[in-house]
Length: 116
Ligand code: 5GP
Image 1 (tube, helix red, strand yellow):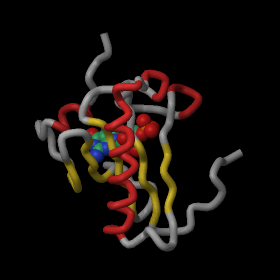
Image 2 (cartoon, helix red, strand yellow; image 1 turned 135 degrees about the vertical axis):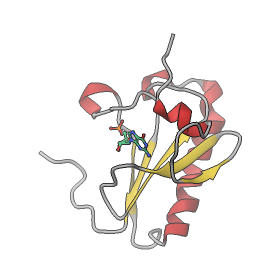
Image 3 (cartoon, helix red, strand yellow; image 1 turned 45 degrees about the horizontal axis):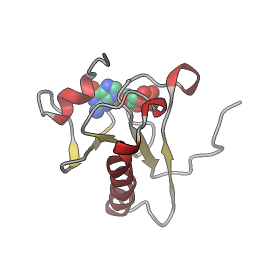
Image 4 (spheres, protein in one colour; image 1 turned 90 degrees about the vertical axis):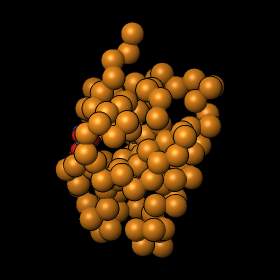
């Protein structure tokens, strides 16, 4: 059985978070430890632990995450300059929270995609 993370509590508003968007499929909130002027996490409301666990039935939520990312990038005023969408998977990907999430990062030049 997959264990809930702190993100489930954020979705249910049991702990505080700066929630920017929520609907029946996804929730978006500011990262507690921002790596750039804009750093937002977009997550499905139902628990998917990692990218490895994505199923056909998750298609709507994952598609909505992308739609919400584009909408929030526009609202943050970073859509024209550009930004980065990141999903980390497991240990080598640097995943810390095992509830799948898309990082929307921008507001400054982000440099090369990967450090060496
Ligand atoms: P990962 O490394 O798993 O891709 O990213 C997890 C992200 O979640 C990190 O950027 C971290 O700062 C953020 N995070 C962890 N716990 C919390 C929390 O309680 N609230 C918020 N808003 N962000 C969190």
